[in-house]
Image (cartoon, rainbow, N blue to C red; front, side):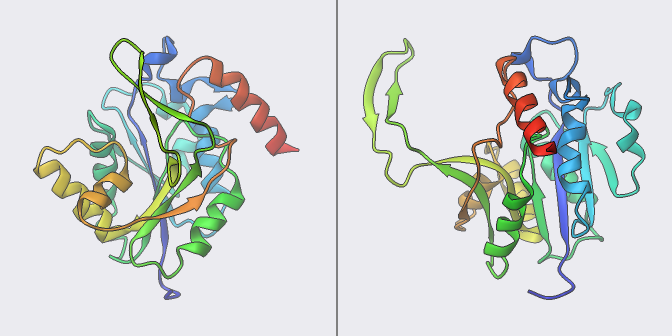
Length: 234
């Protein structure tokens, strides 16, 4: 890899987290002394090898400016979109003129605050010379079932070679930008960055993630996240 290659981060944080049943967007819910989003940003701000972080927030966001991290010189904000991939695309466009086409961009969920530094290291090391990029993921160990609309089992899914996607998902800047732009132009709804890359005919690499890297989606996840954050601070 060229010594001039830089690392950037995009965090889509424009969602409202309806499943949390809270009166504020879930990324602003406090846990272990900080908001979820602050913990997430800390995962990257503590690293000297991250150039800048772009946070895509909702147009009517009333909480972001109250966070001390909002004035960090390495943090850039942009307006998010209605869908995750639109927020990510807006974040990538902000990097136009700053990021080179072969720079690395890590896209990370705002509600994954328990990311280990060793997982970021693995992404950087194992994808160092990869032409496309890859994602953190976990191999499925449980028996997988496919259900119908009534939650009745319709069949068993072969778990061999089946992985659960996590974030960060890290790709070359230009490849990710073009892949998301193509998806948007063709009205293809992509659920993560890897899907956009796959639809472009490219093959991302799977990198071992870790169990603590949970995405907070329900109230029950808050206590687990607090326990993980406590362990990480020891």
